[in-house]
Length: 279
Ligand SMILES: NC(=O)c1ccc[n+]([C@@H]2O[C@H](COP(=O)([O-])OP(=O)(O)OC[C@H]3O[C@@H](n4cnc5c(N)ncnc54)[C@H](O)[C@@H]3O)[C@@H](O)[C@H]2O)c1
Image (tube, rainbow, N blue to C red; front, side, top):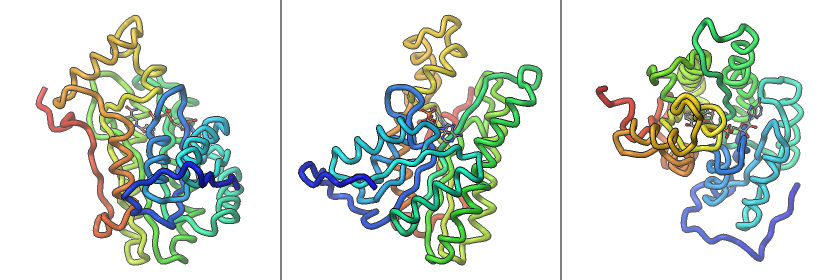
């Protein structure tokens, strides 16, 4: 386990997650900048949680751990593919051996590919389904028994407004899997409510994270000019701008905490008014 740097303890008034262990799946960033998983990991650490930062890319997970440690928090990096049962079993065994429990599980890793039914290969469909949906089944199988034993736990799914609406371009596999995330979490929340486990989904709108630079820019500007693509995304949102990863992280921290003790089986849409808009 990585060491705690006492000399640079970041003092925050918010210690809502003090003593809790938060496992964030897909805690890294796919390109330089702040992803949703990274912001959620750091925000939960600032609220007192010990963070198990899991990612397919160990470097990305280690970067998050380093930032948390620099602020005086406690975190450890783990490498696994969220869609691989064996890898996840080994990673979760390691988390339990390091921390002894898992209080918060955020299932954040997500991938997509632009296109409709003609442009989406069966291989892409299967891979997106495995990473975005089967990962929930795998994590649930491995972690729910631990939470049941503990008699408590908060599970947070990460969907997308693409799982609720057509966003103006075909993104079929991604959208269908993001709709599935919402319903998976709803079903699980009902089954385990009496065990002290809460499960909710955050539905982010258009968020300015590094992945949009790589994957989505070309949809908004034919030359994939990042500034133009960003401006086009900003214009779509009633609030007038994309959201930040930190604006998702504050909701995740809330859902993870006892402040959300009576909230389960539902979704919180964080989209600057996008899905309520008449176009
Ligand atoms: N950025 C947006 O506008 C937006 C909007 C709505 C929803 N979301 C959702 O939020 C989540 C995070 O998005 P982001 O933009 O911060 O993404 P990101 O691509 O920057 O970060 C995702 C992280 O997940 C990791 N990951 C990917 N596949 C993995 C796998 N199989 N196993 C383990 N780790 C894996 C990546 O290595 C990366 O570090 C995704 O589920 C995404 O669908 C994003």
